[in-house]
Image 1 (cartoon, rainbow, N blue to C red):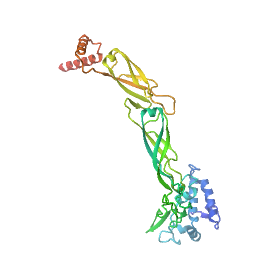
Image 2: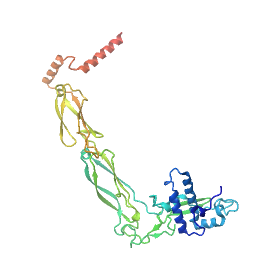
Image 3: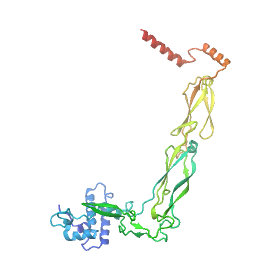
Image 4: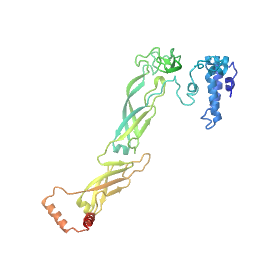
Length: 376
């Protein structure tokens, strides 16, 4: 199927100016862009055609070859100027056109634009109590700031950057190696397409100097391990007026001497005397809010028994509610007994029955049955 004339594809006359070509291309590209026509294969095909047409006609050398030889100028066929050697190699492509025409419209940075500043990461360790209450933290961030001497322009006199003569402002240079055309970042301007003729003596033309900044950060109550807080625009500044990056604050919670955290809940282990476990009683445990909580221990409490204290856990992020606290008791065996204590325990042991230690009595009863079965 023969290709449509490129001028007809764009809907312009053969003698149209560069501005008329660009205006027609913009109008058609916006109309048939895939993002505006999802799932429409016909619109997608049309979008490719107008990009192919504009890729040729926007370049004076390509346009001249097309006006003289038509589509054959780029096909390498018989009669075309590229016959026998693979056709013309003009380079470029859809990515170049798209960046040039729609870099701002689609939120993309043009290849010759100044780069956005780098993002920064700051690790901050806080206590469990600070995570519970929230905190206004002061952090010191090493990094770069705009040079005050040149107001971030990089120029000693404040003059705007000049177009790079090496790449003519494109930011890229091309080199022919055999059948291949290799494109590289311009070594003179570093890909920006601009150069500073009179660099600032303070910053050396970069527009930035190293300086430590102090920032105030609001840490909300209820944050967890690994919480990330984004501070927009507090990263490295962009070169020569480009937007800055962001600062990301990563939080870690220091280990606590009493509590282990599980989401919004807290877990605490409390050793209790054997007598308290046997007879019952009360114990006091600390709360993460700085207060005290009483726990009633029932008679005959065993190790690993948990008591739940509702609403005594951690704050819940963006909520007025709190989690729960679980107190796990560990019955402590008496040590370093004096003579009187030993005599009392021996007397207690002699007076004991099956009901005082039901778990151990049941376990060893099963052990005896097991060995008796082995004898049969």
